[in-house]
Length: 266
Image (cartoon, rainbow, N blue to C red; front, side, top):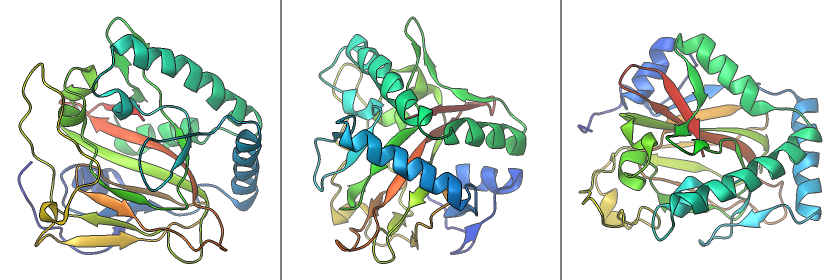
């Protein structure tokens, strides 16, 4: 991706034009205000807490500690057969449906909104001979998230999602801290060499050299809002205040195919 300067340092509303600008890395972020109302946020927050109490929540193999419900495809980017990932997908959908069963389905609502706004087909990504990937990961990221990038052609070159040409990440926040929990995005699209048959390069815990001289933009999570940004740019989340609200969210990636149709996965 060619380095481009953002047209402005602000959040935009969700329109077809702005979605295209975000895919082309010309704006830093889109915010959908009040995607979920207070009752929907509280319902989903209670469902996440129920899942944690019932040992459904797991934790990534990264620091700071990040809890999740579902499965992340990138965790299987090396050292695993595809069948290992898809075994985790079946378990992830099973756990996810338990949470949704205690609340409502933000993923379905977002996919319908995305299709309506974009004018293109938006659906869960599939892998040839294996079926659906998982989408709609639920996270508890109150301790922050280290600097990283997400871009399937470089993270997961052996998967069908590598056919996309741009990638966004979206999150609905159902609880958010008053202090901290800030996402910072650096306008420095990740670009590394991929060698067939070799493990993809590490994309987590990126050093300062990856962001030197780049524009940056920060956004605050607000309960009920969805925020979308270009996940090929390095991004990180600051920790929240220990005595504050949790940072609870659900989201996925959105990949744009050459025909402009959209794929979602986590």
